[in-house]
Image 1 (cartoon, one colour):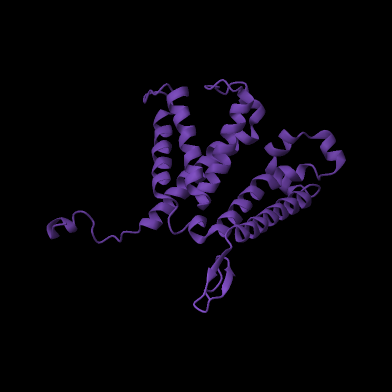
Image 2 (cartoon, one colour):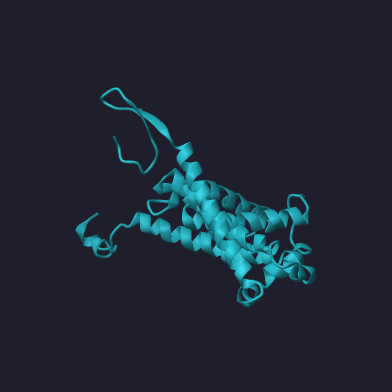
Amino acid sequence: MRPSLWLVNLGFIPHWMNVALLFLRVTLGGSMAILHGWPKFIHFQSTVETFPDPLGMGRHFTLGLAAFIELLGGAMLAAGVLTRLSAVALTVLMGVIFFQVQGGDVSAPGAELTLVYLFGFGALLLTGGGRFSADEAGGPYALAGLGLLAGGLAGYPLSYYLQAAEYKASNTMGGYLASISSVLRDPATQTTAWAVWLITAVVLATGGFMIGRLLHRRVIHTTAGEEVVVTPGDSPP
């Protein structure tokens, strides 16, 4: 670049590509999970009757699939867990929404936001998660992150089944999910809810890490002719 354009083009700002990818992952993935996936999950019954079914798979299945991809896929993308797989799922979902539900019409309500997500997820599909992601940390850490996210999503709903029988008799699963804030503050339910949620996340994260180590074990040959089994994170022989 010519020196005369260096200052005009803000050449003094460092090229923090990995920080930019982290920002993009967290903002796109996090907003998708929190603003779109979670509301579909907790308001499933009130949403399903008016939810579009562009592929003819049934409203219940379509809404469940969309909520699953937006919630889990968005969280995985934000953490950089299986980044490209998550980006593929979210890109396809946004493509279906724009071309099937919104008819490919940029002026349709919500179409501009859909395209922002579509192009953003497509960019992350091409680049990957970058240095500050669970993927870059190695297989065991990626699977540990996936387990942590799965536990974080499944732990609270699972805790419903371990609540007292009297509580379950008067409260449905849908109501339990919709009233998460009151459940976590109520002395009668908060201990079970928090404990099951935390234990589920820790168990699945630990299991993912152990599975990742087993899957990534390999045999290397040293200069002395010995065979050594190593896993990611071990010091080289």
